[in-house]
Length: 355
Image (tube, rainbow, N blue to C red; front, side, top):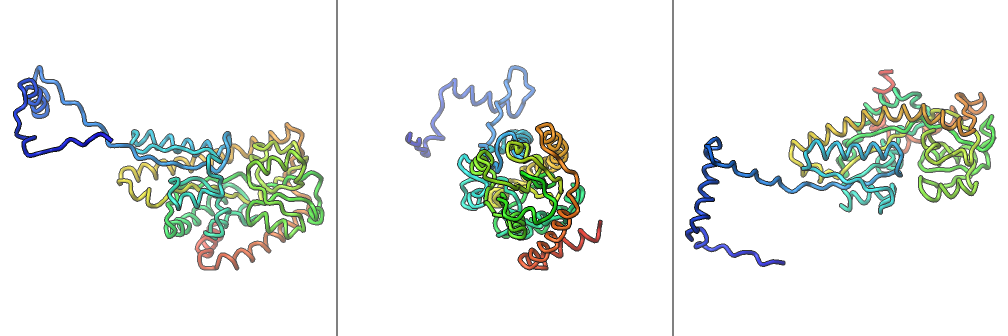
């Protein structure tokens, strides 16, 4: 490390050489009389060091959720004129979605994106959007978010997190290797699970649950034919080329699970007010854009599944619909017991009252 120059009382009293005196005088005149002919304006001071944020992506490249996060980061870096530099870390480099919450709490990263229902063990209200058939459209999902967000913001703040925005996946449908007519047709089949809703569905249907979040294990299961059922969106099915394994897609629109983007509250609170406002503005823009992208992805995905030989069914057979209606009722009762009624009522009451 280079030695730090010593500053002594004589440092400030030593007479500079004549050229140095002229330079000092010119600088002083430039500051006092910027319009004086022959006097060059003083060079602007260098901006303070940029603040660095690192956000971990919860999904792979080419997924619209990942693109949305990168757009948020770029927008924020630009609007802050470089004062806040936001880097997006690719999935698995080194954090998986399951690691992002803990890594944020430990300070290894500033924040990232995580499927809300995957955080429901810590934040029960985060899983409210994965209740089957609570919402029937993107408009319903957005209205639910209106009442869910303030409750979740408070819960996150109590755990040292700052919730920035949320983007929904398109409505969830059921992929199957063979036709399904009733709930009995699911019994014994190998079903991909990844959250409380899918775990509960597999148990209710008597299917064999396979814990397969997005990643290499799921890819291997699809390639090897190791999975028979999958409840996820059309967009996710396109991302993983679901037609390699599945022949049928039942467009149930069972629920619209949201991905949450958050940062450490400490990192957010360390910003000055101007930067905080820019972060919140960029978050609102990313949320609006993300909801629009989600609806577009849904329409395009169904067309892509059909083009690749899958049969897309807009409505399930009556027997299958009855099975899912009963499952939805059962799930809602169990979820309320786990989540507790007080917080849930803050969301459910206005949501149902303002249909």
